[in-house]
Image (cartoon, rainbow, N blue to C red; front, top):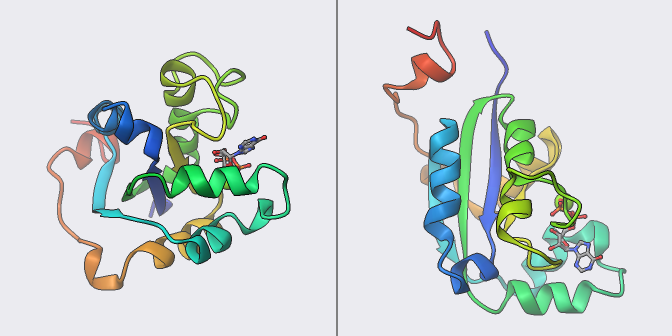
Length: 155
Ligand code: IDP
Ligand code: MG
């Protein structure tokens, strides 16, 4: 059986302010990703300190929290084969000016912390982050008719 994973994406405040939520969703849809959960959430400082625990001592952390609290975010869970790395590939490098052309961050942004999108970076992080934002009954199981093109025999 292929390696089916789930990953957490957050569409960040700059995307909401700049009316680019649809563009981001559309890029993931065109790639063929299967969405199994989605909601808006206004993040509090405690959640952000947990979510960004690995950088909470960096000098830019307060501005990251301020930015992430400036609007709600859109939280999404995608599911599919090797989805964690595939989503990171579509999202691009952390610094939009170093990201490869064709990625969301390179094509649609110029700066940190306002780089449009968060995406889980490992299997462990994805599991923790999905639990941080969603309960089990907010994750939907369904058959997507196009799965055979993206994950199956391709016919
Ligand atoms: P990632 O989002 O690509 O996984 P991380 O290193 O986990 O990158 O950093 C989390 C977020 O913190 C980044 O997406 C960005 O919004 C912000 N950030 C990272 N480095 C900087 C920085 O040097 N200045 C300001 N914000 C930063
Ligand atoms: Mg990260």
